[in-house]
Image (tube, rainbow, N blue to C red; front, side, top):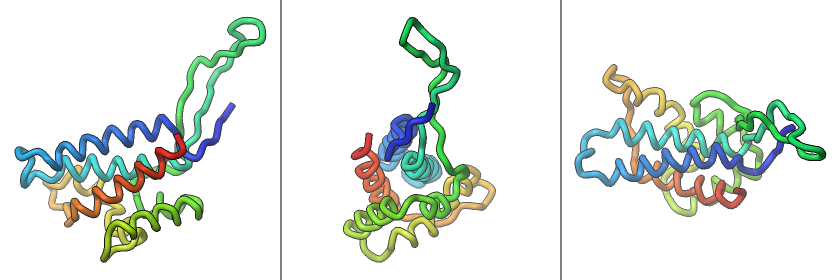
Length: 159
């Protein structure tokens, strides 16, 4: 059995956890000039928020618990899209979700559209995990934090 929702709770709560970690790291004085943990947690949270919009709850291995009552050995969540590319994940969302995210983001920040945001940050999770190899690119914490709040607010409406 599968249940489709507008936002998959298990994926949403994982995203929220990485979001909270990113906020704490961003505010910590000890983390000044150590951006990698912030950007890795923040962009992974963004990835998970995007995945929660098309996630599904999957009920695996049903069995009859007692007469008329079905239990499931395992209940999991899965996202329709795989990978870390934020641009691709955003482009695979349905039109209504993309428009809602774009509208909310662009009301809160100027100088960058949501499409530009997802293109700019499309591979930051992958690049910044190994930034010591010279792969790191620039980022704006304020842009990231605004997008995190937008995604959280929109996804939480459907939990």
